[in-house]
Image 1 (cartoon, rainbow, N blue to C red):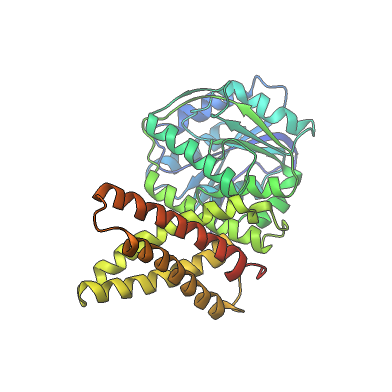
Image 2 (cartoon, rainbow, N blue to C red):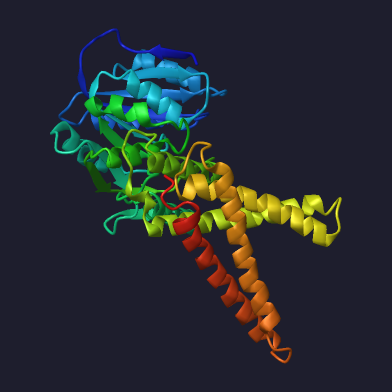
Length: 384
């Protein structure tokens, strides 16, 4: 990766450096940067604004360079690859400031929250500071869909990774520069999950996270692909949960191996496995009759389910015991099938269809609970 950086030739340490990551923001860039600079000039600390250009292919680069050449406190950093996490990592790694921060170019967050964000870091009271849109004191203007997705995502983080912070994705964060090297060395993501991973790593390494309720207005021109970002975030949660559980992050083993966290991850794996089964069945159906297609799809989906539960749900890595875990997983599937089949066989012929559905649903729920308990105590119990 190559970068073009236009920074002042000085080694002077400043108080706060604010990074503004951008991609094709020719319309908003100049006005937003000048507004941010105007506000920062009223603050009692020295500052710098860094425009981190994520390989824009419009006039963003030209505008960014012009601002860097004409506004003393502004610098321009060009990256040849996209990725918000990549832009922040690169800009922060080059910073000579005491505190590094970032905010979205659309200035969705009210700038009045900025001094409240960085003050605890400048004083040494906290290590990381984040804006939160999910506090009762926050005033947020955005659509119902985005509000639901945000709350669901942060709730998922609390259930799976046992996070204590309230809003992982608000584009308004700051970190003490002396904490950055250790943090960045453990954060892998280069895109949208970077924020979440940074906070999880900070939390599990014992850093103090300060939350600031913010006033926030949704940008109607936002070009974030919600579906693609959500899928990337889910993959990030799975990877991070596995890495923490297996100690790969250097953070030690976090409390993600408790029963509640395991149960939720087991359910998520089950949902994904069901979708995979349906896809495999459709593919196999082109070659086999329904019975054979069902068997093929069930066997393959079960293998994937066993592997995902082994790695994601219970945090087991390496090849040792892999075959044994697969065989036990198929045995557990046999137990679940026996429960549901026995229920169907034992139902009286005179039972009504609604009660038949109720009975089979109850049997499936029981089978799922038993599968989880067997996975936890027999298949993967003690294997970590």
